[in-house]
Length: 91
Image (tube, rainbow, N blue to C red; front, side, top):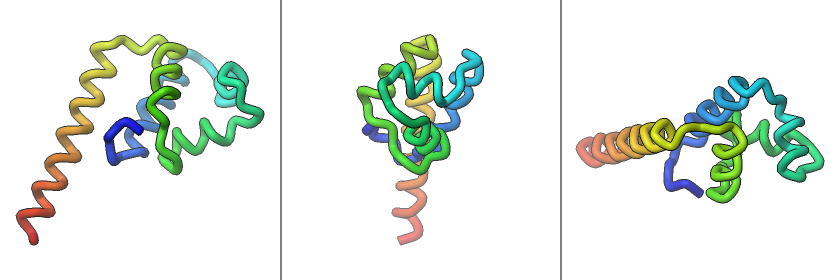
């Protein structure tokens, strides 16, 4: 797992990059050796977390620039911390 509590944001990030590469979920799942596109669908919809190793494979497959990945991950970590701090203030 990536240490980010927002599976939906990660899924949307990956889906947008898959779409930019004009790849179907089936094409991605085939390249990764899965028999069905369901696992990719579940990740993109935020239903399932993306394992770290798979995240690395996908960013390579989608050719996502390192800077963009880092900015995305740092932004998501910041949002998660802000949510935690907000909860603590309410308690």
